[in-house]
Length: 199
Image 1 (cartoon, rainbow, N blue to C red):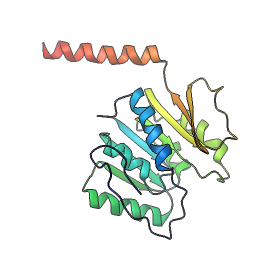
Image 2 (cartoon, one colour):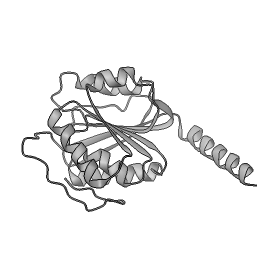
Image 3 (cartoon, rainbow, N blue to C red):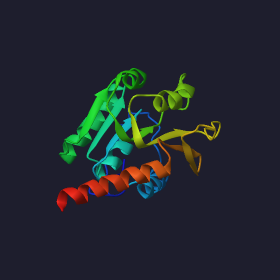
Image 4 (cartoon, one colour):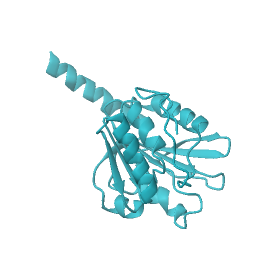
């Protein structure tokens, strides 16, 4: 597993052979993160990685400046691997949750700026994931949600849908909570308040 960019960029970690999770390819991960960084600066944001697998997405968020990253994974071997990498990085800004993603989303009231979900394509409840996340209490104005999926899924009719990217056989649908004008107004208001405080 390779962290691509940021403060941990180019660090590599050997994934145990008993982990059979399908990781997002380096090529796809690099490109989708470039898209996300063009949409919003990752510094001082909170990210959530659902179905974390090896934690590659979580560590990419962490490396690129997120204030906090929470990853949720149910498999014991994957969780142990993620924790071992966190220890090697000596970074306490990553929280690892071992548990069922569906139960976590249904009970979590914490808000996030980025939510990334990469459910196994063969998961029996795959079709429930997007709606579950987009209807959850974890969203705030400006939250960016990414669902990784195969070519058989089309989310373009969802009101929060804003982009689709395909890299090889990997597809990403991107959603943004609140229109761009609303998000821009909120960011401008934050800047104005900061200037008033500093003046």
